[in-house]
Structures are given as C-alpha cells and as structure tokens.
Image (tube, rainbow, N blue to C red; front, side, top):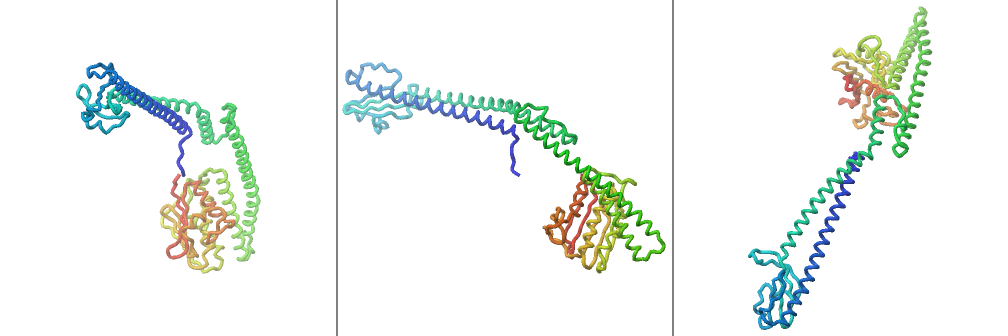
Length: 430
C-alpha cells in the first residue's frame, strides 16, 4: 500500500515549500543581480579611469603631477620603462582582472586590476574590493536569515490556513467516526455549510440512508424467514416424534425417521447461526455458561454418518481433554458439521479421526487431500470440492464467518500421510 500524507499535512508542506522556494528564488536573483551590476559598474569605472589616467599623464608628463584619485593605486610606465612593470602584470592585456595583492596596511587583499596598454604608455589601476567582498558576505548572511524567517513564517501560515481549510473535513470525519461507533445513523448535512464539504455530507447521508434501509430489510427478512421456517420444522419434529412412538414400525422406517429428526435439528441450528451472522452479534448458550464441545462432536458425527453410506471408512473420535466454549451449541454444531461432513463426503476409503482437546477440534481424513496454496481459497464463497473450482459451496465460508464472530480460528492443511486436516481452534482471539 503506497503511503500518502494526510490532506492537512500536504497543505502545510505545499505552502511551506512554496514560501521557501519563492524566497530562495528571490534571494538568488538578488545576489546575482547585485553581483552582476556591481561588477559591471566597477569594471566600467576602472576601465574609464585607467584611460583617463593615461590621458592625464600625456598632458602632465611630470612624474610629480598629482592625480586626484584616492580610491585607486595608479602606476604608469612609458615605453622606455616597460621592463619595470611587475612581472605578474606583464601578461595582462587591456581589460579588468581579479587579482590578490598587498594593501596599504600590508595585508593580502582582493583587488580589481585595470590595465590599459598603448604604444607609449602602460597604465595600471588597482582597486581594493575587500569592502565589496565583505558587503557580499553580509548580504548573503542577511538573505539567508531572511529565507529562514520566511520559511518559518510560511510554515506557521500553512498550519493556520490548513487548520481553517481542513476544519470542516475534520469535523465531518469526527462525526462519521462517532456515528460508526454508536451504530446510530445521524444527519450530517445540517451541520455544514452549502459548500463542497456540505455536498459530501449530503452524499454520505443518502448513502447511509440506503444502507440502513438495506440492513433493516435484510434483518426483517431473516427474522421473518426464520420465524416461518421454525413453524414447519416444529411440525416435522413433533410429527416425527409421534411416529417414532408407534410400536408397529419396522427398523428401516424407524431409521429413516431418525434421519428426518437429525435433519430437522440441523436445519434449526443452521437457522440460529445464520440469524446471528446477519445481526453480527454473539450469543451465549441458553442452557448454561458454556457448551460441551465433546458432546456436540458426538452428535455431529452421528448426524453426518449418512454421508459415509457404505464406504469403507473407519471413524474414530478421540477425547484427550475436556473442552467447552461460551457459544450456543447450535453455532458449534454448524461449524463442526461443515468440517466433519466434508471429511465424510470426500473420503472414499480409509479413516477419519476427530480429536478433541487442547482448546481445539482436529479432523483428519485420508481422502484426496488439498494443496497448501489452495487451503485459504476453500473458505471463499463459491469454492468447493477437493480442488479449487467455482461452484455453490457456502459451508466453509459460513464457518469462517462464525469464527470471525466468536474469535475462533479455522484452518485447512494437507495431511502429511495423505488426505487433509481441518482444525477449529476455540481460543478467543478477539
């Protein structure tokens, strides 16, 4: 899952980066323009002054004639004294150069050297730019502090603006979260202005209303169906009980009546489990503090034996430890019926071992088995059989939903010696 910042964080970061970038761009442009203009001004001034110096010397050949330029150190050499020019300066043609030299106080300083070479005179002007460099450093420091202050200011403004902008969205999220926790629908639109957030609240109200109607219809339908199904099941159960009391029944008829009785009980248990799933609520046993899982296992094995028919399958039930769970026996029976029933149906020969103890029920069979990579898929709706294939299988999907409701854990795995192993762990993991 790709990580994304919260909307408020994105507003703050965007505003801060925008302010920082704009201020930094302004600072860079200021530095560049200042340096460019200042350098150009100094170069043009030096070039003009060095030429004026030459013209002055042409008009005033006396070496002691004063030249009123206190900012510059001027040297001029006639054609007869070109050899006296400092060796480091001889390589420069007419122009302006950046050099280092010794200032008047005897320290090495940065200079601008303006050179003018004519046939009769070579002139040199040195201009101390140490003050300019100091000003540049001070300007850089000031601009750096300014950028930092603007960045902090942008961040503060970003926090303030994001809080104002995100306030309706945050309030909407808080109300939706509270409504989700309480489970009671509430109108959201009335709390917000007629803007984008208000429109979103209106859409959520419509969606909530439709979902509430759907859930209500589903609950009413399940309740009505359960009520209506219990009536004919009660009639079948009572009629079967009366028929079993008849003394002139053959053993074959009596066995068939027992099968009808087991089917009625299974149907009643399934109805109870489906009702709990539709309401998404747990229910404790009605006849005690907990359900004896071993007793339910015996009943389920007995009820599922018709799936074995005449197959050569040895069924063993082993009780290693007592096991109880705070859930209705009907729910436990539905979960175990699917697991044990599958083992009986998909085992053509061999054995089925049901082990109770250590907080779980384990069902091992010697059937065709399953692949490890297909184990989880078998709990999906519409997947059935010994290989993963689409169909109408709902049994294991119902088992998984019951486990999620009661905090149990169910798993399927290949059996090392062949076949499959199903485990229903009753440890509450909620």
